[in-house]
Length: 295
Ligand code: ASP
Image (cartoon, rainbow, N blue to C red; front, side):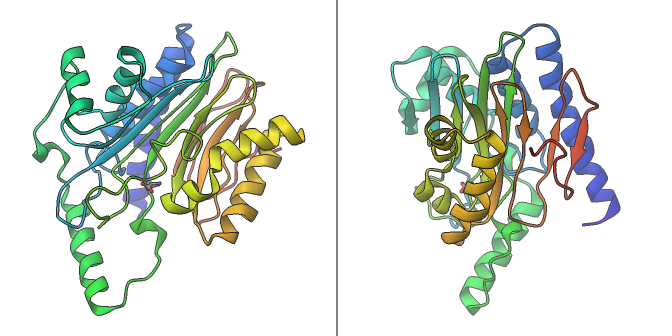
């Protein structure tokens, strides 16, 4: 990490946070706030979603995204898509224009075309940095020297929000893992794994080793610990990240908010790019230091 690179990440987080804040300040819904904030993150080439998504081992892009409305647990998710500039908008179309929750392939793309969401050519998603990282990963695999550097795998974007009516929402978008097999689907578009929202408990968006997050049902586990064991969001989220994921050797973290607007952002890796704000505290952009609102 160089100072210039860190400044770039901070500026990108600031831009996305402003987009979400503007929606909420205008009395918009949590659902709109997370959708728009994630679109802003997808448009930033620094993150592994939309423009800047990682490559499959075939040198292609397959993107996953999800959105969930905590008011009624409606959800829309897409997996393995290439075309929409903002995959999270396609997930939202699935939620709002179909009776389904999770869609893939041409059927999913058709919903977006009917809705008129913007499609772009494959070049839009190309970044030299991700391409180099694919070559490096394939080279290390061939040599048998592949390490478990989380930077190779994390970078998914996500947002959670609570609006003035008390509604919660979550959205997540990702290119997946560098050098993944074509057809692989991660935790991000799976409700209860990488994305979840219920206004009575919490909204969650996760990043990390997707397979571990799926096997642990990370987001649903946090909701269940709050609902059934009476834990606070921080207790439940910390337990799942520090104990549950550790048992599966899974690295990563999540952003989460509860019904009272308390925020927690636990992660078990070195850093996680994150930003938050509310009406009562100063806005914060953080990479390494822990969130002051953990408890
Ligand atoms: N969780 C994502 C996946 O497994 C990867 C990431 O967080 O960057 O697809």
